[in-house]
Length: 64
Image (cartoon, rainbow, N blue to C red):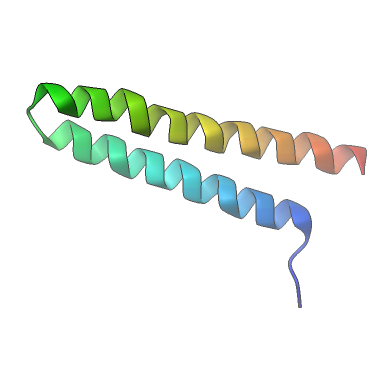
């Protein structure tokens, strides 16, 4: 049985947020100037994309 669209979107959002937090955690463990760049350039956009996808899935499901 196929999952509803909102569950699929929320699943993707959770994966993006988890990946972003993992990247941020690994960047915090490293003591190097490029670790901060990795934190900002990769970790933050992944978390932000996951949050936006989650919010859009909630808004689009209420309109259906």
